[in-house]
Image 1 (spheres, rainbow, N blue to C red):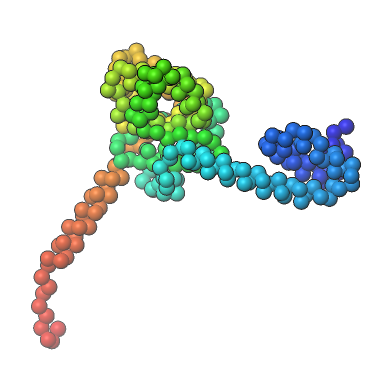
Image 2 (image 1 turned 90 degrees about the vertical axis):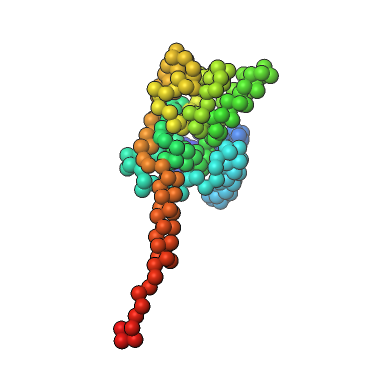
Length: 277
């Protein structure tokens, strides 16, 4: 008879939680022996206090894990959903971003593709998703596409490309930023395609691009390679379209308008007033 069946119903949930925490702590013997031994000694009244201590340990471990994940992610600091100007984006896009931030798409190794012109907020949104996932304990890597491609080229040259890909496989999500700026050589296209093929249906990618699919031949050089790459990233993918004006352009326009208005006010000559006015 299990320990769970020999303790009062009020203690069953507590016992189950202790077992889960012991398993999380990689303590299988403690998980199987803790409650039965306290029962046998007539000390089950101590178990709630013990659970409180275990919960503190679990929270401390989670915070340390999140700190490690954040440092290794290379995510831009401060680029979160809280700092993203959601009012500029369509409501459906905002809802999708919030859904992705919960992380269910990682379970099926689905991809996310964010398209939009420079300055529309796609990189910020990608970073925001990454930050949210790290807070939930997921491993994320944010890297500009050109940088990762160069690192993979070096690994290929040194005959350690499989090792480099295995290292990247440790991340549940790779955020590949600005893929549109990659594609200057066949070797670059080859290692990028290899990365996509290796992660296909195994690990997720979030790719931002200012090039729509019809322009991806600039990256992969020939129609067959382009079609194969698109096929892999689109299968099981969520597509985000940032069809909004550039934030940087809007901000520059507002500042220029404000500057002109201030200049006009400063150069206007006030109308003389008579003593009777």
